[in-house]
Length: 197
Image 1 (cartoon, helix red, strand yellow):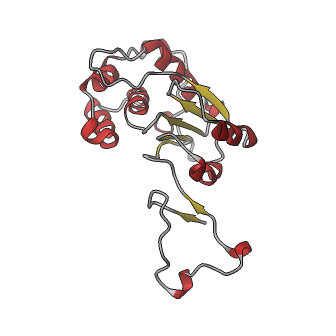
Image 2 (image 1 turned 120 degrees about the vertical axis):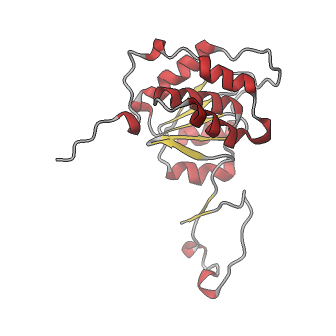
């Protein structure tokens, strides 16, 4: 099994032990993660929109659920992959707006967080188109639930958003009301109590 970080490009072997076998049965499968893929917490991952090149990688994660934050219809090939892999799709349509005065819908983010907090849905993947803004807002709210300091939350958001970081997204993360989720148990690794017996 090889993980390919070259964004879908195959790399030439560097020595004779890395050469590609002549027999297809002996060939190793190359796993290609989706754009901006990262682990958020145990059983929670984030990325950009996965496509067919990423199916082998996603299968290796043994996902139970996918949260899509895009409003567009889900591609048929990806729907078929999810169905064949018994992965449940939760679609929360948030418009990918570039305008600073368009509000991110709090109620939709709240419902998506409830899916994330239910560990029966884990392992799960959160994604939007590029894995930057909408995904960054949802992950930022998760980090606040984990009691991260805001500077660390914003550092992570900016790492994924890069030059396209939005002040409006960071304001949303900072001001999002988490009190509505106080009755949902936290299943994050940073909130668990470990038994060392």
